[in-house]
Amino acid sequence: MLSRFENIDQFKFLICLDCEFTCWTNSFDLEWPDPEFPPEVIQIGLSVYDVPAFTLLDEFVSYVSPRVNPTLSEYCKNLLNLTQGTVDNAKGFSAMVNDIAIFLHFYPPSQALVCSFGPDWKKINADALRHSVDDPFARYEKLDLRVEATRILGHNGQSIVREWVYRKLGLPDCAKRHDALYDARDLVRIVDALHTYQASCQTDMSNRKQTH
Image (cartoon, rainbow, N blue to C red; front, top):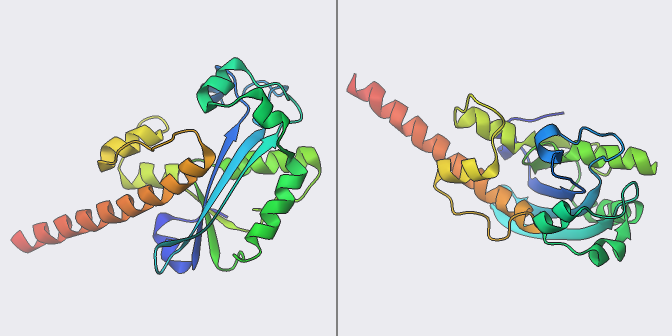
């Protein structure tokens, strides 16, 4: 189930999720068009925040060894600053999922909202099906921050990218882009800036009403 940005305060925990996937030169633009070259998770990062206190509680990061295409493309290695040895020596997807299930035990679906920039959870679910394991995020309500930022910032064009959001909200670039943990941490910075943006817009609207 997808949530809206305004519903964040209904949860105790915000689980910021980011993944990096096997990719090739046309993967992002065409959404991995070749079924023989799917987006397999090769790194996952989680950053958990206490919503009422807006403080960091916990983090998780792991590299993952892909199964369908175990050899990374040169494009992928350069984009993510990875070596082949990093994923060769990483855990398999099933073992990583087990680690995540243990990590999520403290953040039950009734109290936690999973947030990512784009539906990363869909690709995790596809990997879970390939490996015949349970999707650890299946029972959680989800928030697609890309969709919500598009709506809040009034963008009417093609799908936005993080860098556009940074510029629109006056934020510096992420310190280590395309690292799953850094990108997961960065989501809460975008959430905070969107809260401020909305509050500013509401104040402007209130002031206009008072002057008319």
